[in-house]
Image (tube, rainbow, N blue to C red; front, top):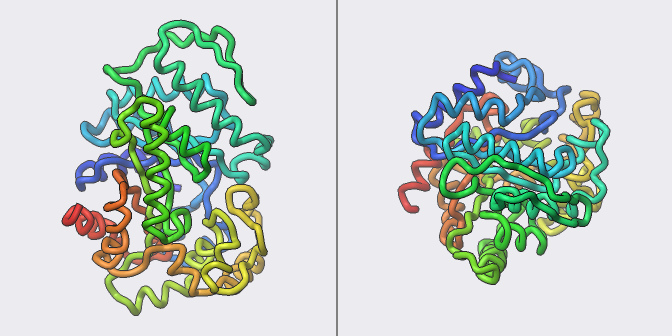
Length: 364
């Protein structure tokens, strides 16, 4: 919800503070219901009018690239439902030139909240992802018209004459956690994106097996398996004061996120924290729709029925040093890139992510 110039300025600030990359999300609306984004719940609402305002990522990246020299721009996660493969390839190559080779495109199956309300069906999203990654790769690597007969998308002698900015095409990463995603990430694309704690199951050894699967697909495709990027979006709740952390466990924004960003609500059973407020077999990506239209009473009821114990399963909580220590096992098992996200500032608390970054760099 910040002004466009501030969106661009965030990249400039990130580069000045020593970050290596910044992501520009592809979203139609935010994660938090508008009903609880009010000054009585979070002072952030007095500074930012809305959490549902998202500018077009490629446009913002093109502007920010002019004002930066080193920063890499991540564009995504892009679903393959709302934009056909040709447009995805054209945008990625355009950004490759705009950033002078400093962009990464991240594809995934997508979220229903970006689709149904806007006239798109999510049916067949996994097949569209499969086709998109293959077709985009072909456009990147071929000087000739491209043909591909896919599951949902096909092209017939389609021309995209634009060539990459440098010697190599722009990088493609794939987000998700299925056998097909592991194949796409390793054999066709250049990297895999996951998130934790929920997405990696809080189990470094299980995560290592998934990394091995991605790299084995790369090896089988004749690629260098160690050259495949392994990116982990890290969800944290960071603060050096344990008392503040304990208070945040009861904050509505934290509670809402603790029930929402799950691959499946059945994880609550696995964690032994009680029933999930949305019920069994609920999944954010395919079920969370039009939450911005929920009433305040409805949202607070969900928050009240979200057990506070879930917070520490959905976020890496603790001081900057404690959070970094929790991430160390994943770095040791293959993570090459970390995307840090801290829920604490959504409540008005001070952001301590820079200290997490420094603690990670101290041992990585």
